[in-house]
Amino acid sequence: MGLKDKLHKLKLKYKGKKMAPAFNAIHTFLYLPNETTHSGAHVRGADDLKRTMNTVIMALLPCLIFGMFNAGYQHHLAEGEIEAVANGFFSAGFWSIDNLVVGLWKVLPLVVISYGVGLGVEFLFAVIKGHEVEEGYLVTGMLVPLIVPIDTPLWMLAVAVIFGVVIGKEVFGGTGMNILNPALTIRAFLFFAYPTWMSGDKVWVHGAVERANEIAGGAQLDAISGETVLGSLAQGKEISYSVADMFLGFIPGSVGETSALLILLGGLFLIFTKIGSWRIMASAVLGALAMGLIFNGVVSAEWISEGSKFYSLMSTEFWHHLIIGGFAFGVVFMATDPVTASQTNKGKWIYGFLIGFISILIRVFNPAYPEGVMLAILLMNVFAPTIDHYVVQGNIKKRMKRLKLKTA
Image (cartoon, rainbow, N blue to C red; front, side):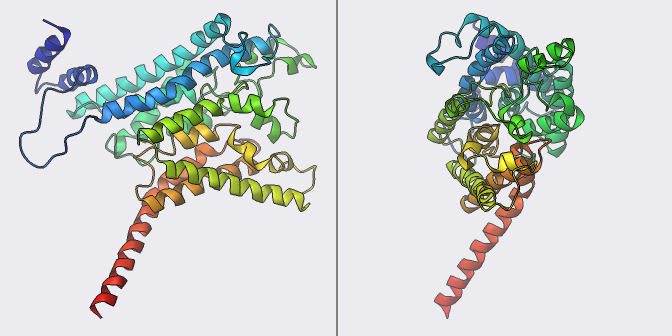
């Protein structure tokens, strides 16, 4: 008897009992469900929600693997053990086993805690409420470790995941009913509950916190600094990274957010598989470019002095905003969440444009937290139903006018 048959027998044995959702989840995750529809209208398709979620995870895997190597690379670079790579993706120094070992050691526990705690809460709610285990956390569980600093304490992550799943999703009725992106809800909880671990110049590179505590001030402290590009710009410092480094991802930052190239490829894959909305991605980019151009215009018109705390980020080339920070990752993998995003085509253009516009606005005017895409997406998640409502009402009014003209 094969594994599939054994799981099916267990499923039948526990059918109608408390633990049935747990067995059903394992069975349908590994195999196609045995049940088929027999009556009523229905749609037959080759995919289901689990397969859709797995497709998104496939798009995220390159970012995860690159993030592991980059975690080790940034650690060894900050320790002075290696020199900066000269030829990017083709550098053997970046793709070394030493870098991967550090990355595995730091990133895999984040993934395990994210999935272990999150799915544990999902199973608990399924058993208590007596419904099927929902697949929504399959993607959230992968997103969470990719949007947090490398040295985030595991217990903090566990607490945040419990909060995000319970408050961000289950209280609204589960997958498909939540109004806020669960992964960003978890990230927001971490930021507001433990701000010193989510910002600053020591949390983005493994070992920077410990070394900073060991070294007593002076120029030595800068050698182990793990400050991000946005963090440096927010403090008015000059950055030492090239455009190529920022685009390819050889910079400090959250685990999966540094490589704009891999994020772009992941976005194209989601568009090709018709899972991600190209309208939201394109309009978010347009919104960010528009806001960046406005700030560049303010600087060129000399309406703001060079000594202002806003000057550095305002004077940043408008298109550079697309390849630094978590903007690209947020737009591709979280703004396009089909549950929390706008549903109408016109609404998607409005929704995405406002996300890009507000992201850069927050980035410039909040030097203490220059990464604004998280707050922008959460804000627009709240307004997405309102946008769709007015788009639908506008279409109804137009059709009513055409009807009156025809009957007149």
